[in-house]
Length: 198
Length: 198
DNA sequence: CAATAAGTACACAGACCAGTATACAATAAA
DNA sequence: TTTATTGTATACTGGTCTGTGTACTTATTG
Image: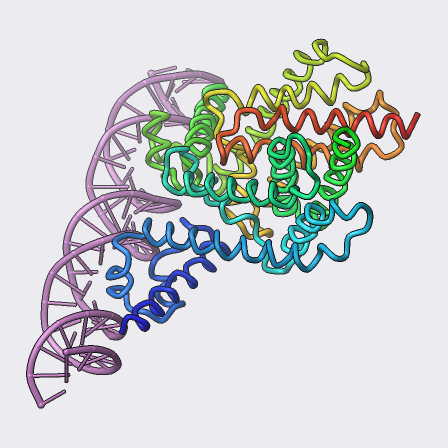
């Protein structure tokens, strides 16, 4: 019972996530989600008291999914980096972004898109987006630990800015090399900072 | 007569632009635009055959306005740069972005936001956004002309990625130093490339 | 089996949406 | 002053949206 309840809820969130990502949040009606999921409207409103609550749930799910994808990508690409071994983690991060942004289903960053749809900075959606971006920066910092730099946070923010730029550029201008461009910049920054700190 | 017609039209586009920017395009109804502009609905539909046409007009207006703001900012900040004089233009570009992203009315890049609201790459809005971004890259290339580098276009794309990253980061995470971070990276890239080319 | 929980089907409310129809007023040029 | 243009006010159409109410069915659990 509890298992099936979870399953229905999960299924709704998963379906909504896909539609919100592909068609935008405001561009996706509740009825479309229900039709796609094959679930009754009442069931949705038994699990979520409003569309906003469903949106929040999809963003939380996307956050977990994205971080998992990112970490898997880093693991996958870390071994294939040339140059200093200490750089492998961060460089693999940009390869993971590259693989994502060049994939056929890519439609921008769900959090950037959501922020754009809800521009007000105090809106719950915007707050969640900011939180997600903070988690990404934290992860980049972890990837830079082996470098033993003096200013890991500052550099992590720089890489986050680079990554966001690559993602947005890839989406808006359909530029398939945006992430590799960002990676090249990251490599130069790493080299410079490594020289300074060692 | 023609003057007044233009004025009404202009006023509608200006009002719509502000509302679309602050509240999002899909978040702004036609009636809100009309109320804010103090114009009758019929007048709007005499000038534009649909909301989509109004959207297009606002984006075109925003493109002109933004490029003008950018160029004015570059003129303003170019003289205040330290270091190599050849770098002044590009560095001033990031100061202009900085001034914009830290202003109180800042609500992200209208084109990035619009792209997020209309994720489909073949949608007219998306196409216009891509065009705008191409114009920005072109302008950055012009700013780099005095540097006489071998690969001005590649570097301009790098700066564009940086700028997009700064804009998005500033908007989503309310980071008021995003543009200065991007500027620092740009300075390092300029220095490296200048050394190589000269 | 009985009782409780969860899901379904479907109609419907109330709000908002883009866009139209109509009749009238202001304007400005001829 | 006549005439064509432009704008206004307002009601309305048809559609979509989120969310609710209700009666019925299925599934689970004790």
